[in-house]
Length: 210
Image (cartoon, rainbow, N blue to C red):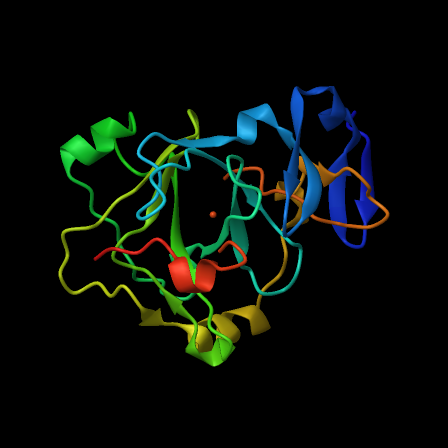
């Protein structure tokens, strides 16, 4: 039987503490404990951030559905990301065989797909990079940001209204938020998505396709 704690609507697995964990200090979220198995490795880095290789995904637990791809190599770097199917249900990622092979994938059934967001001061101008999604092998946690061949895809797709409409009908699935906990739980309720990257200046420097 699994013992769990429900904290402000979020579920924490007590036995998760037995798994190998590392403490990571971040600028935006403070000090977090992360399961080693949830660390994502980009062997090529991200576009414009090729020197940053290791990340993990943070779910701030709010209603925006926006996650954060937090760098382990640089505490101040975290990129806002989101699943594109949330605001663009018909969005399709078509990878070349060599791109699938680079992630040890036969198809995308065992992968997670995210788009990097640019969030300006006027949030209604929020946009998603559909041209260069992030693809994560869910089993190996190897990942790449891949520039797709489809010329119709936009680097700055305006999606604020579509996201807003989705949020209205959204019901949170807390069962997937169990693998990360803040070091001081009384001060924070940050958790990480079990299946799964804007620094403080990331709105200006989001990894985008040229």
